[in-house]
Length: 412
Image (cartoon, rainbow, N blue to C red):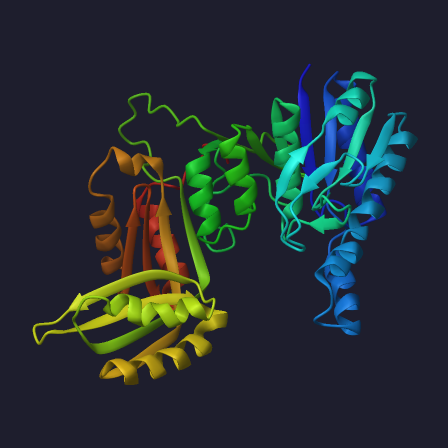
């Protein structure tokens, strides 16, 4: 018998019929003798609807009141699921975040969990009941409802699993696991049986939408085994763990676990910048002051004592960042500023890079052979990212997927 925390997202809870389907899945685990704690999101689209209502009255209204409104979406789904479980003969009890309680700081709409008292939930499990907990929400020290930000139900699930010392946290969604890349771009992508927290964090930060970054960080910190499963398709899913896969001496084993990509990139280059100490700070300081996040940075020093400085930002910040840089260029005496919003970032991720040389050169040769020019390069211990023209995104992903042997049957 295991203690399992299961989290079901908005798509899984999107209708009465789907909620009843979830109830049957939960009941099956319970009937096998497992203790099950369930965390649910609001119905798909409901949180957006509620926030739209709030903004229609006052777009700049109190964040506390926005949280009060947004948190009601999960209050509906926990009650509906508890009713559906009761109908199947499974004793259940629903809990809002404050009823658990899940204690947070007071950063409304982006609160962080500080403490969870799991005594009530464990008592329910011991009595044969299934607690159903509202994801995405908690309670502040002054008794106000606070929400955890987008994707916060994943974080609730992982945090509960850590607090309850659960054997596994299962994240149920509309995909049946983590794939080597997006199957919509590369149909030959295969599901991974397992992946490390490190790799999953990189994939999530680089554009993979399977799991929220914060939940993976939380799981890695508290060593909570995570499994991504489909609500609608039976299967083993993908296990996310601290353990790195054992090679078993297979020389053909892929060095790369996955390929991520991000379409939301834009590039800005300042040319002819005087090459002197503090120039990078002078360029990026105003960008930081404008609360614009910078991703990749490349600086090239020319023979004339000047430098070209290139960096990327989110595409939504492109026009504002470009305007700021034009002002900075005048102050610094730079030759000019140019930009491009039609770029994408493509990244290889894999812990195998630590122990194998030549991954970068193989990546660059493969892209060159496909006629794809690389604009920028960034590396870390288990990741290599390149910026290419947006028109080459699908070709780049498919080329690299094949070059690194990610096609195949394991986990398919």
